[in-house]
Length: 381
Image (cartoon, rainbow, N blue to C red; front, side, top):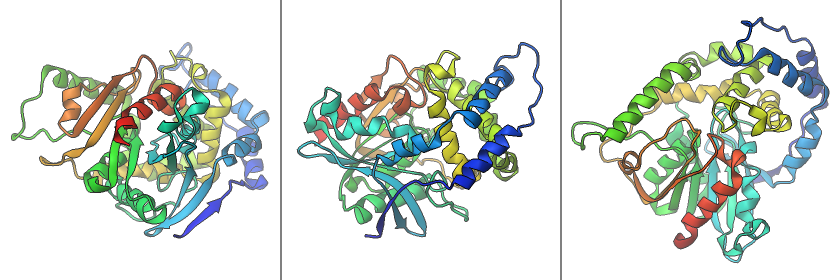
């Protein structure tokens, strides 16, 4: 089966080098009273970098991460890292959960036990899952692709092989948000016979050619909302989708630069009211950042945006996900599609508008997300 157990163990020299670079950060200036208007706030970044250098305990976080069962598997020509935790109920169903950018497998650590052992969190053990959380190729401890064409459809093929061939799950559930939602969608399109159902926190853009019904007023409002968002917030996506290599020299060389690039997204995309630590502790932010830093995967992670911009065909007229699909929308996420938008692509069987939470739902609101996943798959078991 070519599956090997894995334990995180970052060399001390790597951590020493990180602290040295943090200590020698060369800080930019800032417009007086700018706050976060121009980007990552200088005062907060100095506070966070100081904590990263002098107080953050990676070894404690490493121990927390290693409490989960980690593995590597060779799938096609790539080594894929994943967590595989068995459910504690009488008949758990397998589920593969895919993260996005700028998060990592770490985003799912609160969610995993709520799915493997629902009874521990006040749920029914009948609702348990065998949970598989892979790191996307070029993210975290998965191998970095050094060839073009590794995009969501290809990753979907890798995940199908991981689940059916490496882990011997002939049928499985799939969940994802952000890039993970794109991968999960392609799993449903490619191999519906292997898929119990999909659970998404973001949805794909449908085909809107002349053969389909005109957009509704709600759909037109979404299109305009997304256009405004692209104008105000989408610069990161444009550079990552066009010149990721150029950006990577600075982010791969400066941990402060890496932190500024990523933390601004955690603040802007979460339900934190402008106070990022209302949703994420410093330790949580820095654990995710340290995973990017010690693996040197910022370049390979953002390169996925280039692949999607240049090598990802849009959905076609007859691209329909036929398997049952649930969509959970969190109010501070990046997009707020109406149900009819999703129904152009998916067989929507459950539609949940959450009372709170943002783009990083598994980390921000793990109880809400876990309960929605459990409720959706309950009748599909």
